[in-house]
Image: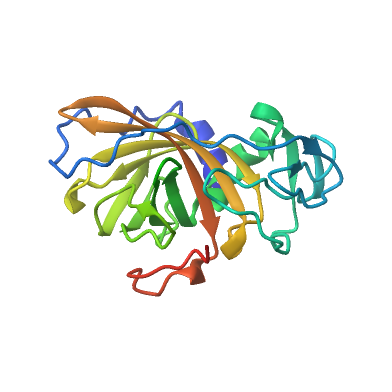
Length: 249
């Protein structure tokens, strides 16, 4: 049973796993000094590659379609690249006219979408991104392992998380939300909601983009974090020990 359907029943069975406890002190991450990138250009149809920030929806809303291509955000350059190998996803119209994966599909397949290797952060005067690998080694849909790498492997970049190493995650009562238990690494614990997913094709073989909202747990309470972007890559962009990654930008 996939995580999405397990979460549906878990809403009636368990309370919020997130504890209002003081998080271990860690180095403060850089705060957001610029708005996250918006989608550039107008929307086109038919799955053709958009140039200069244009976006193709990949087909009509709500049906199983061929993947479209994403426009380039701030500080990134859209390059000609083959579409992802993930065949097709059911797409619907999302925020700002972007085509996103149908919410019901996300509910049913959240574990398949969220597990894997991500570059997560936000765009600004400097790009603030870190690598994270989300795994479920025991196939437990409610708990798993994290690997975090502060080395960003992108130009003009500084890390989003200033810590490295292995940690763990758990789910919360809120759907599509992970509790990232980063305190043992010296970073703040973070509650991260994957709001939307959409297929893209970026330089460096990224094939999925997620819009993410986050809260940090600071001094026993919650503090707003940035609105984040996640780019999902094949696992082989990082070495087996998760000590070096290469986004290909």
